[in-house]
Length: 346
Image (cartoon, rainbow, N blue to C red; front, side):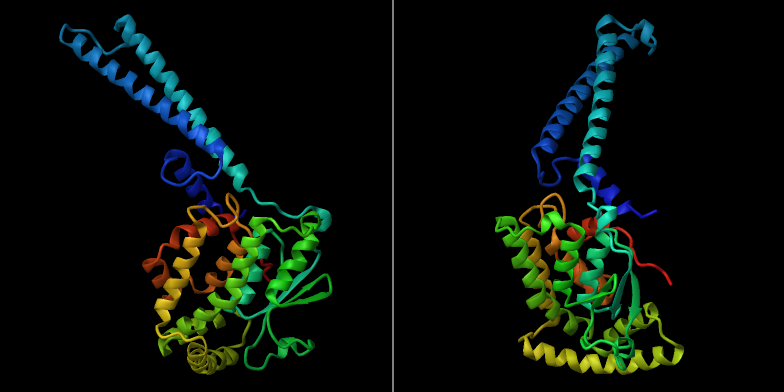
């Protein structure tokens, strides 16, 4: 069973404290208002109950319902009714939120029969594709490519990753993979549209590819310690022999350390962490108070940002990013709705 702890926690926070976050649809606002009114009414009736019973206690009255005055009995009844009403409405709100955030998995007839991803474990573009596959509950196998020899993709004229094979068809380039696979699993949504929402989505998907990914490498490989941390993560999750693990970890860390310095110069990055924090804050500003850029549900831009950040989230750079920016809440919501990996274990 897929874990929904993050999503459940998020829904409960919304249900029990409806004013703590911006509401994105009128039905939630209406329920929240009614819940507040019932809760206030219940509190007033409870106060009347305690006040009345306190006065009666001085003359020896017991705190039993049969011995209470008529008004107090009525107050108790109304208070209980208010509490029950509050519980029912809270449950309705939770149910409404669950329906709103429910995924839209492909219909069985559109679900690919065999999906294989050729990847580097820490590659942001590969992780963008994986976020899409995980969100849409598409099972996939993974072939970890040796970043030094690339022997696993020698059969392909395209010498980069990700490469995704879908029922024998080879797809390349992460954004193109997502567009083509999206058209396969949701053919009715593949109709071209120029709506404001899709224009915004396209803009931020482009921002991920042209800006966000370029600030990641200088942060991941900022120094020798962080470079080794990253390649330890890569080799621990990849299918390498012991000798390959040692070679890839140390040779790869050294190579990427120098590559990151070139990228830093190419993209005019003077302070790696400052650039990462600025990118995170830029994304939060783009949300403009919404739960996701897509509104009540993530869109492809949400999945792209989440995907490229996922491999660094629990590395030193990712921990620093969450600690020093406002992106943590959105990231937690995304973890909840994307859920566990759909990767098929070999």
